[in-house]
Structures are given as structure tokens and as C-alpha cells.
Amino acid sequence: MENLYREHILDHYGNPRNQGTLESPDVTCEWDNPLCGDVVRIDLNLEDGRVSEVRFSGEGCVISMASASMLTEAIKGKTIAEMEALRDEDIFEMLGVELPPSRVRCALLPLRVLHKGLAERR
Amino acid sequence: MSGTTVLDSLSLRADFPILAQEMHGKPLAYLDSAASSQRPRQVVEAMDQFYQARYANIHRGVYVLSEEATAAYEQARSKVAAFINAPSPRSVIFTRNTTEAINLVAYSWGRDNIGAGDRIIATEMEHHSNLVPWQMLAQATGAELAFIPITDEGYLDLDALDGLLQENVKLVTFAHVSNVLGTVNPVEEVIARVRKLAPQAKVLVDTAQGVPHLPVDVTAWDCDFLAFSGHKMCGPTGVGVLYGRQELLDSMPPFLTGGGMIRRVELTHSTWDEVPARFEAGTPAIVEAVGLGAAVDYLNAVGIEAIAAHERELAAYALERMSAVPGVHIVGPPAEHRCGLVSFTVDRVHPHDMAQILDWEGVAVRAGHHCAQPLHRKLGLTATTRASFYLYTLKEEVDRLVAGIEKAIRQFS
Ligand SMILES: Cc1ncc(COP(=O)(O)O)c(C=O)c1O
Image (cartoon, rainbow over all chains, first blue to last red; front, side):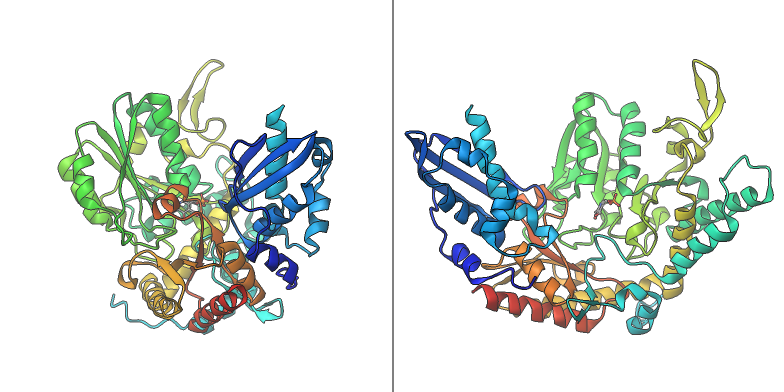
């Protein structure tokens, strides 16, 4: 379990990919984890039904921020249906570490934000 | 009492077998007593014995076992009453916890006594359980909420309180000790100002974080209501206390209704039993109450003054050591005005990650908003890490906390 803060996770935390916000995004959502107050916002634009641009912002622990950074990389070029099909297990696989039970919610916050944003878009 | 008695925490730990274990291969340093304390085996054994030899439902049982169980339950009430210097055991009501005690006042006293345009004063440092019930009451009645602000040092701004104490104030409610800042509020001073400037107002003190650690005297304080939980003071979960001034309790309608709290029931209406039974509907947490009585015995035997002195010393030591670590920011006042808890943030280390690293060092702390979101917002923070101490906490556990913080800083910088 002490392998939680592996190099690739700390790398995404220290050098977040796709950090920032978009001017007038097609999909946007901000949501928090009420337990710890972590906040994640995800903005994305679609072109021909696929993600052309994506940014995340927010404030949180290593796990939630690394998960957000990895998620933005993973959904570039994806369709809405493909993003909707993403499951919790995909996030765990992406992070590639064994999460203590108390950190599962941190890891899943960005995916929840994405799904909420997609649902609200309808 | 002198308050100079030195606590022998190391020997006391023999009463807390749960503390003698390892986490991640390191000895457990349990620094989360503000969330819930551990309980000594004396409490667990008292409950165990009661279940195995003395248990029956209380009241109305015309047989020895039930009569004895009733006596034990009522004896626990007397012990609690004496512990807070209540004038009579009748003014002590057993609830589930602090939260339920406060809700009892909000629903029973509140719905009868608060109306549109009335003012309820709370503070910016309240735990959600001494905030949300008043929000609900204000919404239901059209009353307004006002808040005693906190100063930058983490004290209540008492001069601002004076300005709020107008004719329409019906209730002033505040924490004895803040569960985030650790501030010990000047209860008597607050109550004196209320009595002087708004004599019509009632006062509720939330001593969930006070009574486990400091002497509490409702008679000297002259408060109207007092709420606390058993599980933070070496007692079991599932039992808490509401103290109320006798005339007030006698005038209040029930909160929960059903069996055990009525005088006479017709098919369409009923009349209420006397206090405290009126407020203890249904079968109460009998064994937990007995356990709370045993916890009070334990705290009395150790000495609440000695516990207070021990924690003050630990808090002073922790503040000194932690503030010497670059990047560590402590919230709340200096040691002489706080209980044994320290909340802090660390540059570039999120509280969740801090708590995680500390866990791997065997140090159990809490990270988050500690059910005080408005306070964190006021402090400009989303979360803090909190280490909290009790009678069994050792100085070397504070050292391990500091070493863990330093390790986390190294790891993330
Ligand atoms: C100041 C304060 N008030 C109220 C509570 C609520 O106590 P309980 O959860 O036992 O009802 C707590 C517990 O954390 C507290 O610290």
C-alpha cells in the first residue's frame, strides 16, 4: 500500500496535463467531494462528436489531481458514448496502484465530474 | 484542586488495550480522540458484566432484575449529573449523542419559543451539529440567524457579540471548545454578557469537545442547556446527554413520542410523563448509559484537572515543535487558550496526503473539514489535518507526529 505515491502518480501531480479552463466549453462541470472539500472542474470541446480539447482545474490531494490529469489524457479523441462507458475500474487501472478504502472517493471524483457534465449537457 | 498533578499516561495505557497494537508495522499513535476517544477496559467490563448478569428492560418491570437495571440506569444519570454539577439528576436527559441533544432543544423548546423575527445567535466556529438544527428552525419559523465572528487568532469576538444582543434574541448557542481551532471559549464571560444585554435569551453550550477534557460546572456557568456525547469521554457510542435547567425542561413538550414517555394515552390524545422520562421515548441505550456512568467514574479517578493539565502540556509541546517546521501552518490560538488538539496545513501537502503518510507511520489523525465547513471557509481553507490528544497520549507520540510531518514534506517537495 505504501506504493500509493508511485512515480507516475507524483509526475501527474507535479506536472499536471491539460490543466486550466476553456473559454466557452461544450461541456463543463465542477463538483466537490463533500468529505474533504476537494474540487475538480472539467471543461471540454467536441469536434465531429469527439473530444478535441480538454482542461481540468481544481484543488485536491495527490490522488484526485493525478486522477484528473490522467483522465483528461485518456478522453482526448473519445466520443461521448465512449466517455459514458468509462467505469470505476478503468480509473483504478489507469492509476495502477492499490488504493486504501479512504482514498477511493478521491480517485473517482474526476470521473464523477465528467459524467455529471455529460449528463447535464443533455 | 491544584491542576499540577502529573498524569502517568504510560500506566494509564494499560487500561486501553486497543492502543497496544501496531499499524503498518509501527506502534499505533492514536491522535484522533476529538473524533472519538478510546475507552478503558473498566467501561467495557462494566457493560459486559451488565449484559451478562444484570440486564433487563428498565421501568415498569415488577421483578428484581428489572428493578436493579432501572437502579443502575438511574445511578448512571446521577453520576453524570454530579460530574457536570447539575442541581439534580432530573435535569439530565440521555440522548444518543450531542447531535440528538441539540436537535431535542431545537424541536421541542425551539418550535414553542422561537417565532418570526426572533434571533438565534451561534458562532462562526460551530460544528455542523450546532448549526444545521438552527438553520432548520430558522427556516421553519422565520427567525433570523446571527453569528459571533471569530478573530484572526481564533477567538470569539466578544465585542461583536454585544452588538448582536438585542431584544429579539431568544437563544445564544456556542461550543465550549472548538473541534478545529481547539479554542477554549470563555463560557462564563459569554453567558454574563448575554444575561446583562439580553436577559430574555436562553444559552446552550455544546461541550462535546469540552467535558471530556476540562471541568464543567453548569451551576457556576448558569447555562440553560448543555449537550455532549459519551463516546468522546471514554464512554460508549450511542449515548449522549442533554442537561437542561429544570423549569425549562418541565415546560417543554416531548421531542420523540411513543412508549416510556407518557402519563396517560387515549386513542386520540395523550399526556406526558415527568422529566426526564418525557424526553426518553422508547427503550433507551440502557447499557450504554451504564457504560457512561463507568466512564465518569474513570475520569473522576484519574482527575479531570490532571487530564486538562496533561493536555495543555501536550498542546504547548506540539505547537512548539510543529511551528518550528518550515511550511507548517497552525490554526487556532496559543496553548494557554486551547485544549489538546492541533489542526494544521502544510505547504504543498494536501491534508489527505498528510494523513496517509502519517498512517503509514502508525500515526492516526483526521483530515478534512471536521464538520465545520463555514469555519474552514472563513479561514480560507478547504481542509486541515487535525491531531488530537487525550489522557493516554504520550509526548513521544507528538514526536512521531512531527517526524511524520517532516517525512511527508520531504516526500512531496
Ligand atoms: C463541537 C462538537 N459538537 C458536536 C459534535 C457532534 O457529536 P456527535 O457526533 O457525537 O453527535 C462534535 C463531534 O465531532 C463536536 O466536535
